Length: 171
Image (tube, rainbow, N blue to C red; front, side):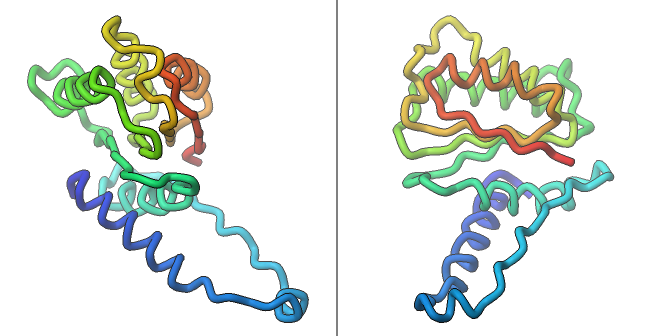
């Protein structure tokens, strides 16, 4: 499944959730028990299909306030960062290009991988590029779905580019 398919799945989920929300008057609100929050659980396997299903749900749950597009960056766990012209180096190039051009307000960049540290390394390295301005992501959001051990360095990188930062622990 490519990024477009993940984006389409996220959009479909968001539309489904929006369509299911009916207007409820105040009396009905009091009569209805509070809905329990759905807890999303990350897959324990390295299966890309399972991860993409999970990530689509997490991304969809974090689009509040996003008025434009969501750009999803996903690296499979088996990605070799040293592979020349492999997925890691191509994504690094893509992210740097996007950051150099700047991202319009209202957009979201989501980053995720079953290998949280590898994705965090990519984000930090891409965002450290000297040609990236500290306002490249002003008014935009960076969503990092990963392990808590990687959160602070990704947060620092995102904030240095002017982004709103949101973290979801994959657990």
